[in-house]
Image (cartoon, rainbow, N blue to C red; front, side):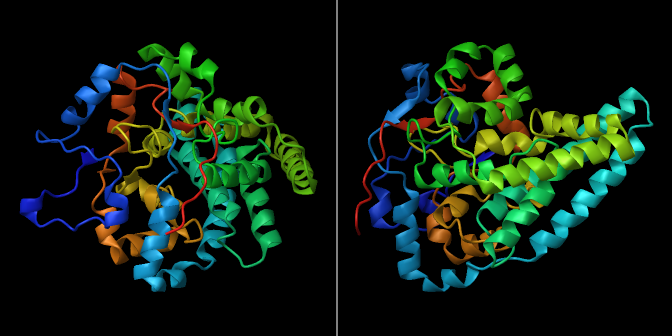
Length: 360
């Protein structure tokens, strides 16, 4: 599940000096048991966020990698494959919705979880790619494709997501700005194992509603266009395919972005399983369905690198990415999050205000 960097006797790749000052913890007994029972977690027994006054590490690491490997800039280009893949998934979802609405309830929900939930999850991550304008060079083309990908998810969200996601990258963990971090109500309401399971099951609802409590945004042209087109798609689906087809789309969201193997990335990316580390990568088979979002340290370091080039980025700069822990199983991540009392919605790094970036 959780892989630590090689020990010195195994010939490690040394982390650059500028980043070596960030706190690191070594486990002799091997993860994940040593990780989850580490005294720093057990003794703190915290029920609040981990508040820090330091800047997130991605900006510094980006500058250091670019300084040593300027060829990384070659990876910063749109990938048209994203468009063809996304359009194929949208068509597949509408075809499946037409078929599954006539099946029995057990088959309906099984298909919605296994097939539709996985594909809608992929479409959400296509919208994530498109929020960074990584399919076309034209900004408006990326926006229109994102709205197209939004159709089978049935809830207008792609354009507002783009704006909130840019805040997440530019102000990671900053209170009142980063809506990726749970709000206080989620902390005290979902502390038990049953509470955490309910929270995971309804994760899509919390991600949709949380921004209205943290940082409400005024709607702009693209937000209105997004809403009009997706709602028009819903009307088309309900009238010409069937109302249960529309219900299928909605259930795909709940099941595919809740307790689902591919949805483990919501927890794996930034929940603090290891003290002082706030971003984690995942290298496993779910990356095939999740458009390599598991390469999350790489993505935050270089948001302009498309999903197809993230593995190449890691291979180019292993001395940065092979010196920090990473995951190999989302299922185990979800299990440890649910089972261990030291983990919860509070297991996030937060900053009171944005910390000024230091120059190299």
